[in-house]
Length: 340
Ligand code: SF4
Image 1 (cartoon, protein in one colour):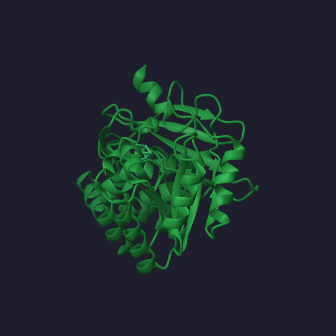
Image 2 (tube, protein in one colour):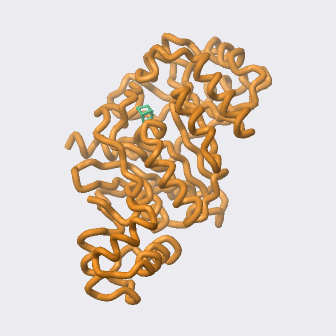
């Protein structure tokens, strides 16, 4: 079902008029949601009662429903949000480790994912469909209801650049009306070169992360199946083009899979390919999911990999996943429900 945030402001005004309201009613409603925290028309007493009723049925503010919620001991809250046609996505609210600094919201852009990375729960079931602009905005509204937000990462279910139009429209609302600046919004992609270049031309610029995972072509074709046949050189060239166009460094994401892509040789080859680039490598020790062939490397091995990059002049960070306890690892709430 179409929701309020699937419409551009001018379209919303037309729809309000068609439902018996006035254009300014649409502006009031939008502001009450984005700035006032309202989530239902019922509380908007400055709108005529009949209009509120019609809007609630025909143009709801939230079109989804919360199907599940897990809170990890570190305060991370994972939401499972379902939409009318039976699809569900995950949204994760990750509080800052520094008190009072707000939280990062990790949002999804697709129901399922067509990329099919074999280590990822979200890719197991393939793609159901793209999320609408309103469904992406809704994740932010639900995240705000958990607690204040200071950053966003588009790293949830789906490949953002395969749904880039809806995503960019949603992020515009988030940036302009929820006050999360474009420098504090990171879009994470597997790096389709032409799409990276197109996003670089978009103003304002967001931050870009490219999931690399290995620089061995054959292994990357296996770890990122939808990119099979696209040379790693082209992905890196698109990253360079991004930096030239935007002046913003690319973060290369690298999921460390124990025994698969975490050897000293892998680190050496990665360092050689990224030598001289203004970029950061973000190492993500694999987040284990039940009954899978992959496992998380030991802390010593992760540290050794990071050190090998740093000693070759790269900037490397390690991101240990949060909210990983029990079955709350990435993509699992959704997968569990689908299996049930
Ligand atoms: S890791 Fe990302 S790109 Fe790969 S299947 Fe999972 S959601 Fe898709």
